[in-house]
Length: 140
Image 1 (cartoon, rainbow, N blue to C red):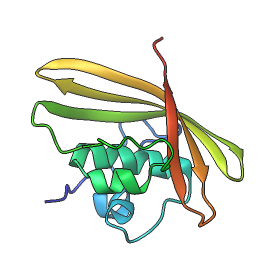
Image 2: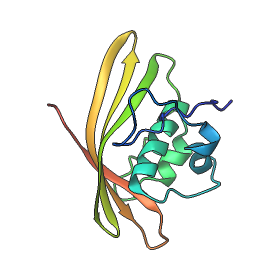
Image 3: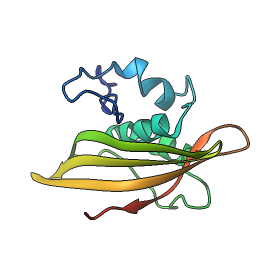
Image 4: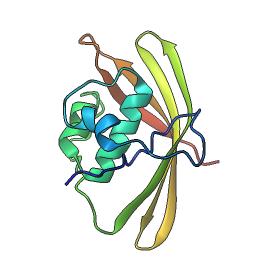
């Protein structure tokens, strides 16, 4: 079953704090379900967060550079993990085929809150598709 509101909340550096979340079908749903391709690395980042929330391992594999994608990747929805939200801090278009997205993803595991603060690197391949390469964890 797909959510009505998009799990990514329409995250972007310009998003107003209390803005209403967009509909899943109009936001990440079109990417995760294969109806469209993300036009920017930020759209890909949001859709990948949504795929983690939904436990969609095939989408994550399809949007991860082959050279860095873990062989044992399994994003199956873990009932102990509850995703709480995504904040995009910045999106930098390095050049036509490279970009970075800094984000904070909040989640709870077994009632304990966590934050993943990462600066991710993306590349656009020869087919024009954005792919996640890797990320650097920001501990500050």
